Image (tube, rainbow, N blue to C red):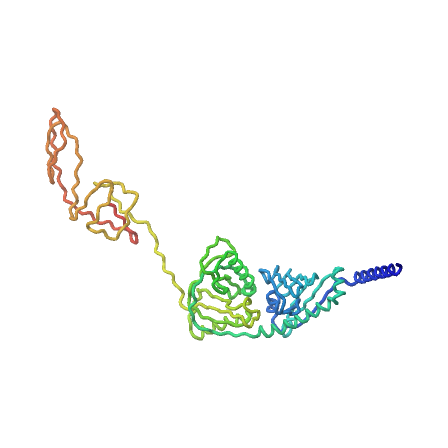
Length: 462
C-alpha cells in the first residue's frame, strides 16, 4: 500500500514539475525571414497582397498541394481573407491593414496558434528586399503542444524560408515570360453588360480589377443574371498628364438590365465598332508594352484612330482559369475609323393655324381637336365640320350663302336680288309696306393665300 502511495506522490511531483516547466517557458515568439526577390517592388506587393496567389507560395502550408483553399469575396486589400484544410488541420489568415506598396499586416490562426504576420517591401539593387515576421504569444496549452510536437519556432521559420524561396523562383520565371501580338483590325460585336464605374489613377485599375469583378459576379449569381463571356474594362476617358482615367468594370450579360440612379452597379451596352486587336500573354505588369505596340502599329500603318470611341481590355484568360501569370491572356481593342456621327433629331414645332377674320361670313370657333396639317390640299377635299355643313364647290366662284329672314313691318313687299327672289315673312297690319332695295351682288374675288412662317407646318380650318 505504501508503494502505491509513493508512486502516486512521484507522479504528482512529476506533473507539478512539468507544469512549472511549461509555464516558465517563453510565451512570446518573433520569427523573421528576409530575401531579395528579382522583381519590381509594386509587382511583388500586388502579388502577395492577393490571397489567390498564395497557393503558389505555400508560406503557411509548406507548399502542400493537397491543401484545399477557400477565399472571401474580396481577395486583396483590407478585410481580405483565406482559409484552408490540410490533413485534417485548419488554418486561416486575414488582412488587417495594407499600405501599398510598402507593408501588409495580417492575422493568422494555424493549428490553433494565433499570430501576427507583417510584410515589409524595400527597393534594392536588382529587385526588392522583402522581410516577413511572425509574432505571437503562446498560451499554456500551446506551450504544451509545442513541447510534445517539437519547437514551433523551428517549424514556422522553415515554412517562411521555403515560402520566400518558392516566391522568388516562381515570380522571376512567371513574370518575365510574356508575349505581345498585334492581331489586326477586327469587328468588335456589341454586348449588354453589368458594370461599376470609377475615376482614379490608372495604376490602380488592374490592382482593383479582381476584387470588383468578384463582386459583380456575385451580384449576377444572386440575381440569376446570365453571364455571356469574360470580364472587361471600358475606358471612357484618359488624362495622360495626370495619369488618371474614367472607366467601367464590366461583366457581359445576355439581357439588358436597368438600375436605379445612384446604384453601385449599372446596366449598359457596349456598341459594336471596328478596332485594332492586340493580345498580351503574360502578367498584367506588361500591359503598357501591349498598348505601346498597338499605337505603334497604328502609326506605322497610317490607321485612323477614333479617339472619341471606347477603349476596351478583355480578360480572356485570367487567374480564375490559371494560377500562372505567364498563361494569362488580355485582349486590347483600340477603336479604328472615323467617329460615328449621330443623325440630328428634327426640331418639333407647334403647328401654325391660319386665323379667319371673325367678321367673315361662316366664321365659327375652331373645335378642340385639330386635323393634321398637310402640305397641299386636294381640290375635292371634304369639308371639315365646324358647326354647320358647308359644301365647297370645285369652281372658283365663292359659295352663295342664304341670308337669314328679317322681320318686316305689316304689309306685303317683294325683294329682288341678283341671284333670285325670296319672299320675306309678312305680318298683317295697316302700316304701309316698306320695299327693300335689291342687294347688289358683288363678284366673288378669291382671297390671296396666307403664307405661313418658314419651317412651320400650316393647319387650315374650313
